[in-house]
Length: 441
Image (cartoon, rainbow, N blue to C red):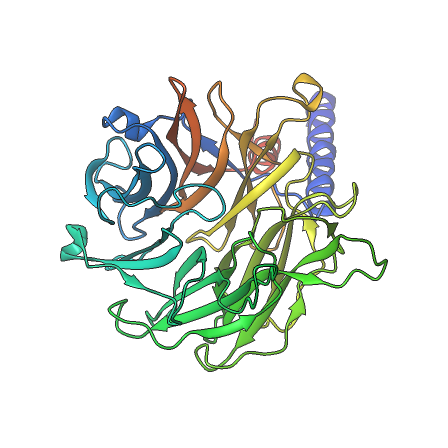
């Protein structure tokens, strides 16, 4: 070996060691990332629908090309809920299959917008129409929807909305929502979280179960399931503020059931953010389960140090929760998280926010994605390619073999429009660099 070869090998070894130390020593970061298509597409506008907003996408994990999208179509006051389908991986969408009747004003956007969940064999939707929470299931393999049914089982006039739907591992269908049935006067501002369960694939639901009262009035509650069948309900609860100022403390809270949602544990805070706020932040939590781990992501602005989208997880069915980390990292004005579990043991978090490096932190609101490795490390935020309009309320769905589908509401020709961006997992740069450094010359 000559002196030049020896020096080159030493240099390679030293550089590789430095990369390894940097990679292993930083447990909060992973170099694995996601590659997105260059430009998102207004997929429903291309199909002739406008305006469109608040889409929910579901991908068939058994197919690389099947996608379903639930979206609100039409002007406010005259909008309808529609299911659209793609058999080419999102290149185009066919439909619509109408979910609700004509000329019925629905709450089609915002935190209280429609809920949608799909399995390889079933699809379910819930929405608020004229103040009532309705549910419908797809029949004939999505060719039509059954007649809607009411989820709230109490008589009288009250509001019910902000729904979330989820399908348990045993295929029971769960719904959680907010309603005002327990208000006793016009000045009573109590909102309660209720749950209902269907054991017949959404054909009917059992009695409503009250989960909690005195909850945040416009933050959508959500659901998660543990690996042993636990049912978890997560919502933003109102806690008394010890400083006795008008603001209340609004922190994420969880209860757990081990008997299919019939009874629940005592409530516990997922994290003691102590967010003191007068008024509702209009932002609920997102969940995903990967193996035995349940992830929860949510917004807090309790202090400048913790402000952003926080991320915590439980490995024991919701009994204990890890100290939260800042999932949005350096992204500014982060909000509206969405989570999905991938088939390789990782998860992906998406949210909206502003790029801190653009226009002194005042860029237009865009969409960002963070990959969560199996050991809990986070990738740096990945900017999802956008358009020259503000992005709102992104959602994400996992496809097969590392595919991800992100949708959000933007604007086209001055009207709201649903955009779709497709991505794939990419190998980490550190791994490729080390392989190159240690490879033969």
